[in-house]
Image 1 (cartoon, rainbow, N blue to C red):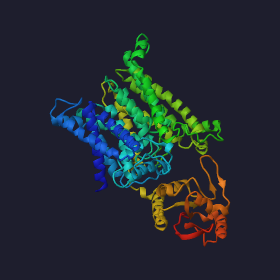
Image 2 (spheres, rainbow, N blue to C red):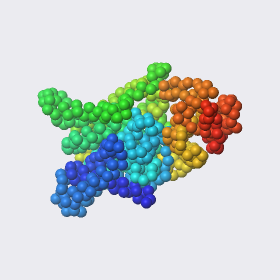
Image 3 (cartoon, rainbow, N blue to C red):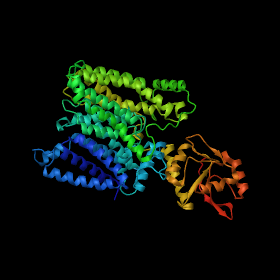
Image 4 (cartoon, helix red, strand yellow):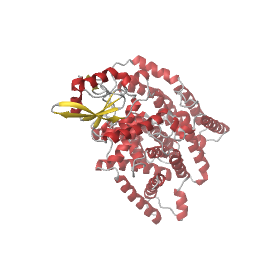
Length: 628
């Protein structure tokens, strides 16, 4: 069975679960797709608790069959008076067609894509691969990544890659579909009369990712999914017209958003909760915030539910902490030798620097982003016919929140990130893009989608054209490698990943997968993570050269060479693999002389053997680890 056929079956399961919620609960198609994604993530997570994440496919099949039955019999809250084909076309909305186009695009353009980004290789890719191979959630002694940074996104990525052999490119497909599901939420109940607006809005969001985001389109990082879920729900709340907020769907959406990334996920959830609260309050007071006569009644009778929503992000994190016995809210790994003034100055400097992309066209800096969003807010408020105070207040708070977000980043660099990351403010561009992306759906939706609340004046049309031209201009650079895996085989990281795979295959031809290997010498961090990903627990990257100890805690113990093989065997190492002789030549020569083995050239592999209390190194072969 070809991989595209397998992907199509999985995507069909997703659509049928959508049909289940559409018919059973009466949700519109856009909300049903969000409910389907939430269901898949929740069931996969619970299946992991039950002992095997593959139970999600059985549960999906059952829900699909029930959904088909309900739809054919026209039962449930979603039953309609139309005939069968009218109901079909009502379910297959323009938003669903957009998600279908996203699926086809991902399946074709992400084909044979490989993990090359360090965090994909070591953490998120390893998490999905671990679930596929073991059927368990990614934590425990056999998992090579950091269990404390678990993301619920991994469960949806698994859903698209868990049938059959693990195929890395399938995780990209699942992740990008998960990204676009919340984008379509504000298009709720859009019939085919508005298909042009839906397509225009979706296209604007797709191309704007190129101008704002820091990573490529095909990624399994949370750089797209988390901010687009938070931003899509925000747009869904603000641009819902006269509809009421579906509190159950809001609660579930916030639960998964909080679980997408520790610290940042709960932070964005609090933004959504504040938005939902203000939106309800303004509408209860007829858009007049000073109507305090109603405040007491609504606080007592209605708004108590928002206290429950506030518990959501922390409840999710507490559950995961209980599973792995680790605090996922603050890892506290980098609090040593940090200069607060230096870090603050670095953050401030980077805020004014344009974020550079891999192509010629730069992404936006914080300052450019702030100015453009301020102009956009002024424009939208000026053309609003309804809910002017509500929208203006929320969007103004979004701008104020940019400064608060900087404060959170300062806290993170002082208390969460490692010292080296903090001193260079590494990754700030990514986290800056997080916040910018949260506002994308809210700002673009009323510009490209015809809303009764918006006066379609010449100003709005001119802005829509300007944004479209900017997005098209953004494709004039190095765009194709960003949106597809085409021409990626020439990039250095891709070549390195392919070489590592070939390297490990040759290594296993000599030693199999029996016993752990100790790599003597130093490699670049990305090389080390690639080896860890390929070899799994057979190779542990936190130990290297002549030292043993935890890198994160900054403790390393120099080993007496005479005790070297004994200590290695005690820590369950069976093989030694030499690397980079130019850097460690003296140490290698001393070790070779002491234990009387033939050579210590780059790539030499030895098996540690013990006989009568003495240790010897048995030569197995050579697999080079170092490229000159």
